[in-house]
Image (tube, rainbow, N blue to C red; front, top):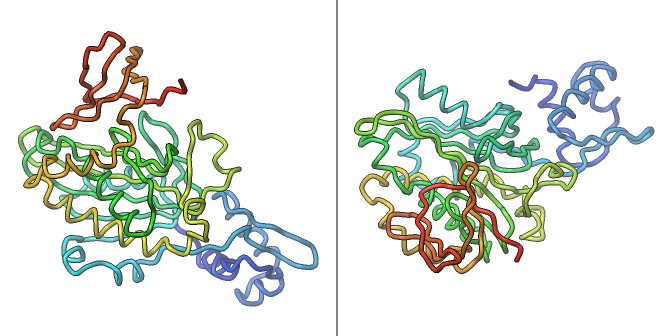
Length: 330
């Protein structure tokens, strides 16, 4: 879905979160006031909160800083620019991951980067909805074609997590940690999630789509469906974090692209020590869900292959390569 020219112009006018009269907007766009109203009604379906007050006009509930391809590219290192073959920013997609999965099926393209301002069907682990209000957060996916098969990318989600932590620390965010296998936490609250989808051969080329959803500004009313503790950068930095979206998007790519490009050579072994430094689960009591089975115990970190180590109530250490992990309240 693409925005119409009129919708984009209306957004640019209202982006300052000040009141603008319907007459003013209509005159700037050369359309009727009723047409302005219709366009605004369509925009509200994307989660944009538009205040309408008689005598004042229309106002967005918060300032809007949209992603800019030019601004992001200007902040990329020369090496990272050379790694990216396509960088796209979409107004609306069902899912950035799904978009690149489809692209991989239809072509042999590689090193494609996709951002979206809004996802109508963003997804997290186990098919859960990823809450994706318009113009507020980071919805990013990267398509990379690995040459040595699916077995060569074991531990990729852990390494991607390290790259995200590095970018957050570069942005001045402290107290961030990694929750196995693919979540980024701040003070025991979820800040971001990673979703990796792989297709291809076990011993030949495979397409991998690496998705990241990161909360920049998430209004309480937009997060009512979230069932776990969460946090956004706006709360952490105590400022209007949305102004940093383009800067942080570039920081992410500057960290992610070299790690992804060199992963088959470097492997997880090059990053295990750093991952352990950010481990926010060490020593915590958790439940691990695998289908209908639940395993409880104390986390002992990860082994050198990225498997989660859990000590059960009998003192026996179990290893997990997958599972849904929940912290226990007691």
